[in-house]
Amino acid sequence: MRSTNGNGRCDLHTHTSASDGMNSPAENVLLAKQKGLSGIAITDHDTVAGITEALEMGREAGMIVVPGIEISTNAGGKDIHVLGYGLNHEDSLLLERLTQLRATREKRNEMILDKLRELNIPISLQEVKEGLNRPLSPDESIGRPHIADAMVRKGYVTDLRDAFDRYLGEGRPAYASLPRIAPEVAMNWIRDAGGAPVLAHPGLYGDDHLVRDIVEKGKPAGIEVYHSDHGPADEERYMEMVNQYGLIATGGSDYHGIRQGVVFHGDVGSRSVPVETIERLMETTRS
Image 1 (spheres, one colour):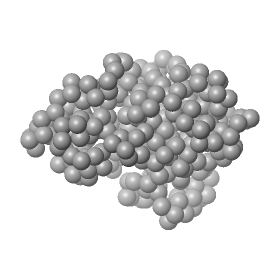
Image 2 (cartoon, one colour):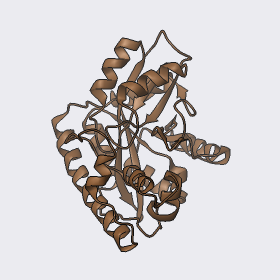
Image 3 (tube, rainbow, N blue to C red):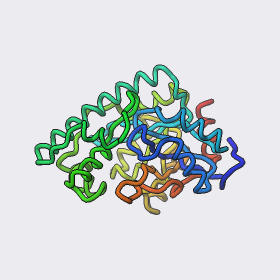
């Protein structure tokens, strides 16, 4: 996979307005080009709704665009995210499965809003959707950042980070979790759709024994070693794990756009990997 543009590197973890990002898919592609990258992956939560637009802009801009996804799963009582790369975003079985996942996400949103009301923070789902300033299509998803935006607009918190630190983050009073598929199931779904599964940001789970168990059960193609919330020690530790299991080290910013003047999690290109990483991932889908 080659591009005549850019620095030979690719940000393999970005979100768009198809899930909880601020930019359109096309805007993410153009931003990656402005940053000097050769490519970008679109990895929205539980949806592939933004991929077609991104691919079209990639062709116009001479950028590599990797069709991707970030699937929400659960293991060991923790929310675990699984990235998928190079999948067929028009696969009918995948689309059916993702519809079921988004139904779970909607129930979780209702639980979060119920908990916020109990905390004297009355916010309706309609108010959350109004913050999008556009109609929500059936294959897009609402997430916690959208709820956080509504909390900021109504003056209950100062910014997105404040909302997560005080209310919406794991272990906080408005956090909610529902039974979800296991990581190895998501990895199989990605493989069924012709893609390569990767365990996302393992440093956020705070349990490397669990990470190893997921890797051994699911046998992903790679681990996201380079992430905006990983420090040097995390990168060194997970690179050792990659080498131990014979996997591929991937990386990306986990860019969600700019909210209240703050980039969340990191800016496009702040974490990247060589374009050859994409080729290595795609090789695993042909074996």
